[in-house]
Image 1: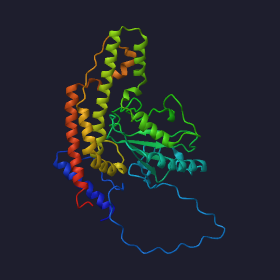
Image 2 (image 1 turned 90 degrees about the horizontal axis):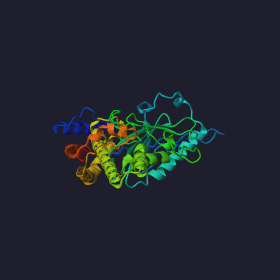
Image 3 (image 1 turned 45 degrees about the horizontal axis):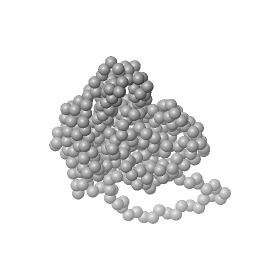
Image 4 (image 1 turned 180 degrees about the horizontal axis):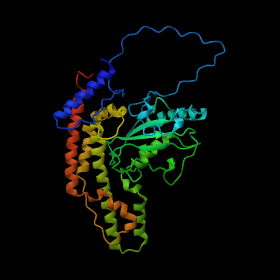
Length: 382
């Protein structure tokens, strides 16, 4: 069976099982590129004829680019993605221009560094794709570490390098936003903007052409933004409010009351992010309800087949049992600082709503993973 037929058959079987269990399948994608399914061995082929001798005085060919690096399942770089599947495709006319030697050499160096740094991850996963048409167009998917509200979620980013890289930093866009409706972190906007000082989109130490590289960008997003247990700590206005409590001269009882308010706000925000991670980046990644690239689809299926039952499911159950208390506003709250936080609808999460919704969506994801396991372990697929 040819590879494309194998993957088409896999997706069709998954659709049938999802329909039988009352799950929508309109967005399930027939993916034809990810190589995580075991393909049948190729038929024997005759040895090709020896290449003709090079012409006299010909320059030796340049070394091949490390575009298909032999990496662990947690980190992979391939080059089979058409450029038009990228968020940044068509935005910059220089994508069709030949790369400067300095830019080419630096990209090759960064690819090697990415292999060494990212393949050593133990509690998170990174999958990277580079365009077959331009080394300036990249995609990467982050699976954040455990003990965060993002654990088990799939977050896709698109990245474009400037033609004079590394003189200027890359641009990065978050694609996993629930169709521009969900702000997964104070530094990840619903429109896809990524706030990071390395990218020049936030205050702090900026891009250094001599020292900065793509590994630092990806690890900063994975660690500083998506690796935090308390995402609200990335909100500078919220930290500013805590500072005001310390210096404003409140009584001890008032300070304790306000600190309790902050604690409840943090719990509500992480609870909201955990539900949205489950609904949008877990369920949505399989049912095609988010704008995931087809290149990642079989990685997603295999990841959940391997990790959901024993690791992610128990973690979700623990989260569903967390105590959620709705914060109560009072006259001491600085509305100019906390207005944007109060207006976010995650503020209305209550204990009963949180527990009920978590149980409902955990059960739904569990049914979806049952379908994935049946399809990927059936004899007719392998």
